[in-house]
Picture 1: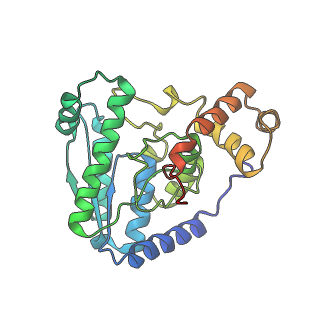
Picture 2 (picture 1 turned 90 degrees about the vertical axis):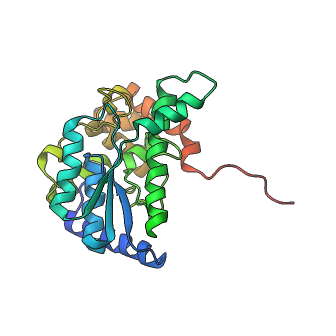
Picture 3 (picture 1 turned 60 degrees about the vertical axis):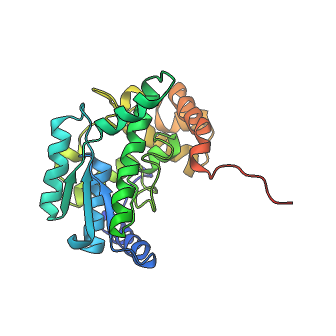
Length: 259
């Protein structure tokens, strides 16, 4: 994709150095990463192993009752291929306990966000117990669109691939030897049965990434971005609106400055 090409080997080396510096500067024992069976966590996991060695990378699989068997198997297969420790911690009972204690009836998104935050809580429980950091697995496409749960999958100590668009992460994944079945797997947060990113986003990432590149890297106006990418103006405007509405997710909570 024009303007989105990356030198995968150079990018991998840069991220490996970044991971190693972040972990060592914190005097941490290593990292605890959530492996979902998707491309983002697969790439971050592979890079963490390169940066720290298998002994300093601990993985958690955090399935719910509707997690596809294929995703769970992919997560464990990746951990086995890297020869790292992985522990399976189902979170359904945790989520049901939180929702069951509430005095209000939440909708699908509210319930989904509890899942993401339960995963974050479990990752940090293990990380704190083991003296480790939690690497985030969000990419730039998700960050710009606000397509993540605040204080859920958005909660992490550092973000190794947040400067790369989803399509670039897939290229990097192929370079790192991630199986094609994972590299090409449709994006899905799996926060409810049969959940797909395409259900909530205005287009697939192969269309959205060039649009985001035009809007935020090239500073193009929406109509110009549509013309240059061949993507309908309506899709461009929806992507821009998602960015605007999610601005709070990319900032620290507002506070008053002391007088």
